[in-house]
Image (tube, rainbow, N blue to C red):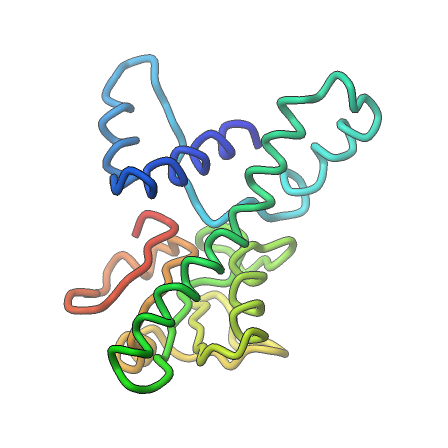
Amino acid sequence: DVNIAFANEISLVCEDFNINPYCLIDLANYHPRVNILKPGCGVGGHCIAVDPWFIASQLPNSTNLIQSARKVNDNKPNWIISKVKEVSSKLEIELGRKPIIGCLGLAFKPDVEDLRESPALYITLSLIESGLNIIACEPNLNDHKSISLVSLDDIIVESDLLVCLVAHSSFFDKDFKNKRILNFCGL
């Protein structure tokens, strides 16, 4: 959780400096003793997103780093939601209509169907609840009770803006050229 929080915080700093965090981290990782993880849209799953709070609740005065990491990772989805809304507002003015926003990935990590504590799912549902025109692709699921899923090919064609949330391996084979993209997972 701490290592992921460091990568996620680097991505926030890079945004302010207009630097690609994935390129920066790749460059830093050339050093033989550096291995910074890739930032993402938060932390999910049944372990890392939950278990550090159990430790912190038992020893709140001794777990400042654990609590800080949790706060960084818990806040990353809300930061992404605000970025998507900001870009969507500008795009709506440009297009003269509400843009179609395609969310790529709902699972909590690449190449699984597990949605437990998924920040990507939380982001997508929050964007839908805020009234944005959202379509989603999760290649590891056939359906979802609250979200209409479309194929990867359809989402590429139909979307005015692609929001990359999970780096599923099937997404790497596709051509996203000439698409507006918000990349929060290193695709």
